[in-house]
Image 1 (cartoon, rainbow, N blue to C red):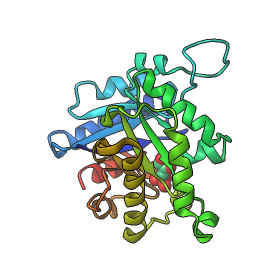
Image 2: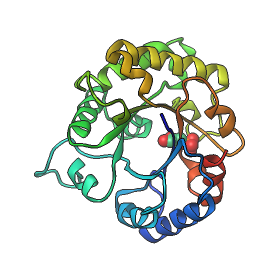
Image 3: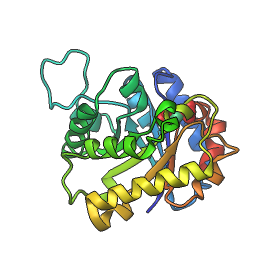
Image 4: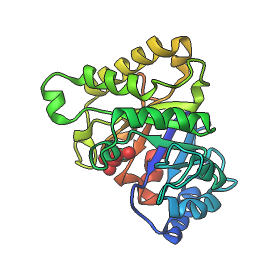
Length: 251
Ligand code: 13P
């Protein structure tokens, strides 16, 4: 299974800025990305086309989207469908990101509906899970992850192709804070996520990627990526500059 290095740009970059950053990143990494690595750029909707254009033809580069609405089309002002994302060149989308859960108010139920609908529509999905600091302090790590995972994949067919569904463990307290989960914490959470996936999906769970996200930087990426059950990283702040993200991709 290829390791995935995903850049979640959140609400950053215009179309032209995105194009320039992707072009720089492709230039900096060209011919140097290990054969078992893939790079995914996840720009805002308005920059999907220009980012997609800039990465076209670049080996092992993919385009992803940050969000969608779980309907084919209709009277849903302001929303974007999976079909529109596929048409714009995205092959994956995020669901359950902590900012969607905790800033935009998405419930476990909504995340489950979106995950199943996105997969059914032909997108690959990166389902994000993770505990808040008070939940960790209360010893609820496993309970939170179990609840989010079970609800997140509730309607996903058990025979889903494992390369279409990835999980991202992003402890909320490590997102954008500079605070990274230590190796022990990452190992524990990722092993638990793998066990949950195995319980739900059986043997194919070993082929599902589990990414770590939360203050990943060039100087901690190689240590994180080498840990058991870490099949990639989901990077926010440090993915915005081509130079910084290239050092993570090449770490
Ligand atoms: P940071 O890398 O900025 O901590 O963000 C992580 C994240 O939320 C990626 O989805």
